[in-house]
Length: 181
Image (cartoon, rainbow, N blue to C red; front, side, top):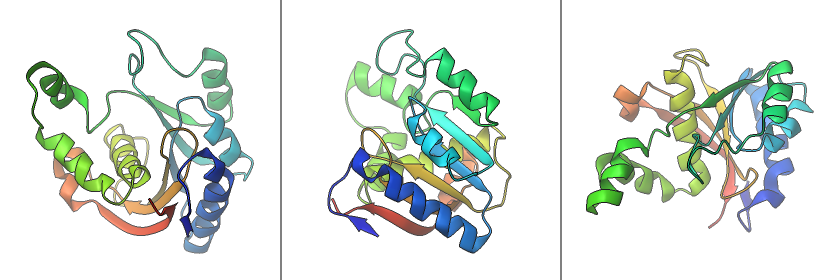
């Protein structure tokens, strides 16, 4: 499915398609990008059990700031959601080098290449690998990764992630939905 526009107006439809495809394939694990928790709440409405929520790292927008409030974090954890708040796979020290010295570095080249398929596809790959590296999803299994462009969700992919040290063995098996541009 291709959306005419990117953005949060596609969140509900994206989640519906992702859950439908997961049921068809017997996929149990979902990895979702969500800084506020709102996208995860919509996924929880579908009685999905194995959810990893990947947030922005603390300080992403403002130094020392965690974009997900304590109350939401507690609510999601009580619902069984595993929350991963850490340095982004395609940012980290490469981004610090770019800010300090200019230029483009390997992780950012990978990110820019994935963005040719859309921001949400890049996010889906990134969060699936991060969740795998953190031990929050099982190794060697397909998962559904849900990401977006800005706020909300507009992209869902079926992916078999590999650990970051072997990221080029990651398999994007299906693009379930994404924006056209």
